[in-house]
Image 1 (cartoon, rainbow, N blue to C red):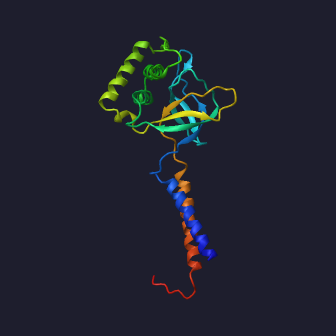
Image 2: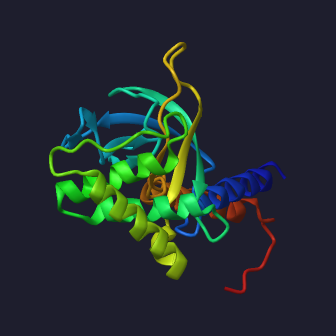
Image 3: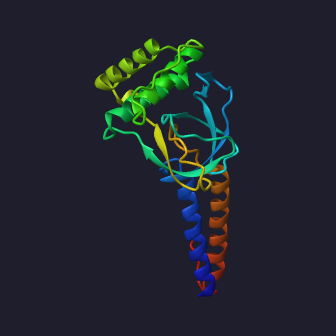
Length: 226
C-alpha cells in the first residue's frame, strides 16, 4: 500500500508539472517585473520612450514593454509585483486604442513614429495634467501624436481584434521600495512561459518513476497479459 501511495503521489505531481508546461496554459494573474534596461535608449523631451526591457519572474530573457502612465517613475534594477490583465473584446476603448499604439511602436523601425505612438499613449491616459503635450524635437511632434491618436480611434472602430490580440496590461500593486513612489504601468506581450522544456522533462521522469513503483507494488501472483 505504501508503494502504491508513492505511485499515486508521483503521478499527481507529474500531472501538475505537465499541465503547467502545456502551451495551452493561461499566463499568471500576477508577475514580478524587474526593469533591466531601456536599450536602445530612445529619448524624447528628456524622457525615455519605448522600449523598456523587463525580466519577468526572473526570466533570463527580457520582454520589451511600453509605458502608458507618464507621471510615475521607475529606475533600472527596480522590482515590483504587477497584475496581468489581458486586453480583449470587453476592454475599454482606451485600452483598445492603447493596444493599437503599442502595435505601432513595437513594429515600427522609425524612431519618430515610435516616439509619436509613445506620447500618444501617455496623452491618452493622462489624468494628472490634461495639458501634457509632446515635445517638438527628435522628429516627434504634437501633429504626429494627434495623427496616431486619430488612427487608433479609427482602428478600433473598424477591427479592434487586429490590435488587441495577445496583448496584456501590467499594473503595479505591491513590492516596490518604501517611499519610492508607484511604478509606471505597461502594455506588451504576455509573460514568457516558465521554462516548459525543463518542466516537461521533469514531469516525464516522474511518470516513469510512478510506473516503476506501480509495477513493484503489484501482488507477486498477478498475471500479466502484456
